[in-house]
Amino acid sequence: MQVKKVSEIEIAFRDEPGTYQRVVRILAEANIDGIAFTAWVREEQGHISLITEDNQRARAVLEKAGFTVTERPAVVVIDVNRIGSAAEISRRIAASGINLTEAYATAVGDEYMTVLRSEDIEELYRALCAPPE
Image (cartoon, rainbow, N blue to C red; front, top):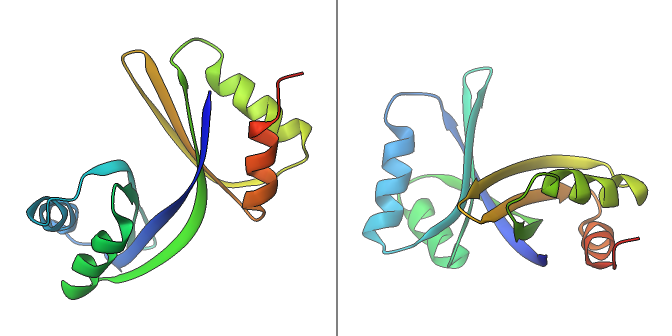
């Protein structure tokens, strides 16, 4: 299991058709590869959180395009895609008494990846780096 501290960028915008396409087009035209991406709408406010191979450049091109961008720490866990991967990760987090504020995951082929956020990123990172009990 690989555990990494990363920076996640988030943009908020008025929910309207085409915004997702605009964001991914801007990143593609800047030759910035996305690693993780999630989007949602609450009360007519759209949100996109993403991790790229170059968040500094991603932030710059998105801000130049008129988006307001915020940055926040997260932890990424990459593991073998098998039944129970998410259960093992969540067991470690719960055993450490950590409350997650955000989590999203995906699996492709033999690889499982989850992005996690908490009020205490350092504690979350330590809990996931500790040897399993």
